[in-house]
Length: 134
Image (cartoon, rainbow, N blue to C red; front, side):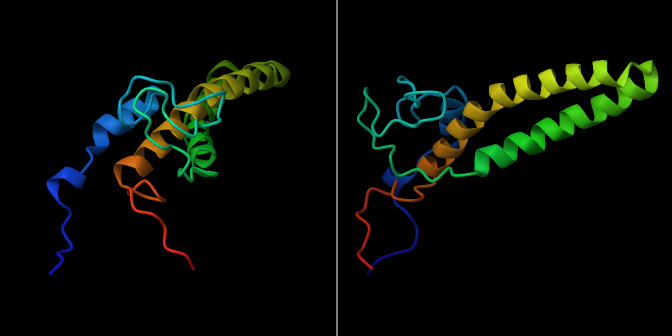
């Protein structure tokens, strides 16, 4: 009789996987880069040969990036405009550059963390079982 609780050997720790993903490393071994280019996830880890092509990060990392950048830049923009009353063009230039830089920093790290979370939770084909045909 099958039980619904997973065996200990099938459990993957989430926190170490998320930290490896944040560092843009393979969620399984933490040694090889997870990306082959800026946001292109490798099909397979070159060190441990873990299949990474199953990920479905899609728009999640972009939404998280927008959420975080908006919650950082928005209050800073309001605070600096009220306290320093700078020229609107100058504040637009400064905060545009800041928003783009913060977005470029966060986006690959958040995508790595999302892929690592999917790997740790065995989502979207990371379970090791073959998908059943429809």
